[in-house]
Image (cartoon, rainbow, N blue to C red; front, side, top):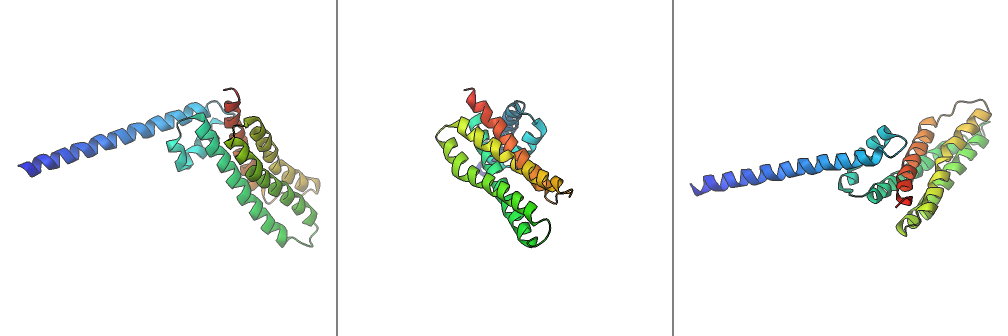
Length: 180
């Protein structure tokens, strides 16, 4: 009889624990949604933040801005590396100068995010972070415009868009910290 009572107690504890976890997850989604409603692109904000497991533990807009900044930095770094690889493959071609423009824009954006935005965010200099993120956001446009100038379709449009969107989202969330 004691084992039945023990088993029942264990089942009850598990059910309560699972219910609490579901409520917490639901509350996290609601918190993210409230913050995302304050951005320029609610759907993008929700998609990007919900795809990152760290967002589930976020409890402040500061936490979400930090996560978005890290996502923007990682995206820009990854895209810069991929564009560098593509640049190497186009040495000696008529498009080589355009690839150099794209590399420069993306590498500088990644370097500024890594060396400037992260440290400024950590000391609470959100105005400086916003300036850096806004400049990094322009890397994609710089690359796209370079290809347009030679009447070619950019083969890195998706990477450019992703950099622009992720930096834009980080900027939107960091802007929320400026008003506090």
